[in-house]
Amino acid sequence: MSRQQIADPQHLLFEAPRHQSFITGSEAVAEAVKRANVDMAIAYPITPQSESMHLVGELYEQGYIKDFYRAENEFAVMAAIHGASLGGGRVFTATSGPGTLRAMEMFPVWAGARQPIVCAFMCRGVSLPPSIQPENIEMGMLLDTGMLMLHAEDGQDFHDMILKGFVVAEQPDVHLPVGVFVDGFFATHTKDRVMLPPADLKLPPYDPRSAPVPTFDMETPPMRVTRDPLLNKSNFISGSANASWHQEILAAAERSRRHLRKCLGGLLEVQNPGAKIMIVASGTAVSQSREALRLLRAEGMEVGLIKIKSIRPFPEAELAEATDHADLIVVPEFNAGGWLGREVKAALDNNRRVISAPRIFGGMSMPPGLIVETIKGAMGTKKRTAAGV
Image (cartoon, rainbow, N blue to C red; front, top):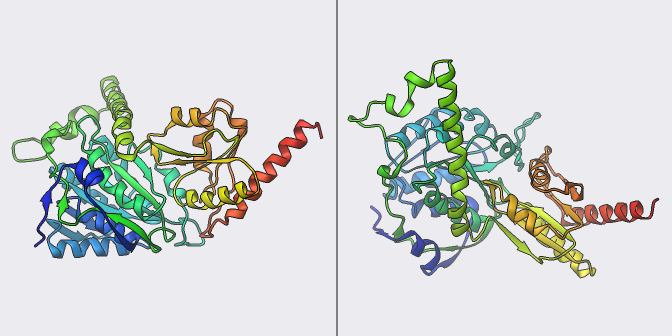
């Protein structure tokens, strides 16, 4: 059995000394769960998520998790996680691509039931012909499920955001599920230096009495949680009740902003503020953008970078302020739909500055030179337009 001491989240996350470890993103997931004081984890294999939950299963054998099992399929996982959370447990799971889509029905159920579940999403293609390659189109499909959505750039982000996800999700004024997303293979199967807090520390246990809805137990009739007599009828009262509950979920997401800012050090990160050309990215596209930034600045071009950490809630006000002076905003993405570009355009008044490109999908990497070419091409177009050509 593991021997760990309970630590204050502030100490565990920000004050405890850390040691460097050279590990994959999948191993970073297990290291986070090891310190998260999880009651139950439920798994079903799907590439590239499988390794992470295999490692979480080993944590169960080592005594770091109270209960663990493999369910029949992805939907069964998310339904069982729902039940475990309804019972008042701190729960964790993970999925990828087609698994995300197969379980889609459960994600708004988690949010509607105000459950502080943390789920890791190792994003991959979901198109035909079948693809297991990196792509994050599934994130665009989850934007309005009610869950909070964090996008990790690398293994360090992945580890930290999972632990911080539990801390934020379980705040009494939040109590929503948190999805921690990473671009599969680029981060999950690549080794990187990750700074880990002491393994003998763990988060305080989850207190279900802090939840805004009661947990299932022998003294709490299920109807008090599911509200079946009211919400399953199609009438004016039912519609009003549903609408007010949805509004409360949206309000809880807004209330999460202050907790996320504290835990993440802000919803976005700005490099070289004041530049007239800004790259806006999330996930591993940030790493590629950092190299593009280096190449452009070596040529004497003043370019800045904005890393979006939180997709839901989206940092509209912070992004507007960080791009207020910019003449050109380029948004590189690992998906065909350009969901981040749409979010950026929706947040900004003058969105004609926004170029939703380059977009890489189908599993290809994004050469930094492609970002450079996109910026130079857009600048050339602007010059020709200004000259009346």
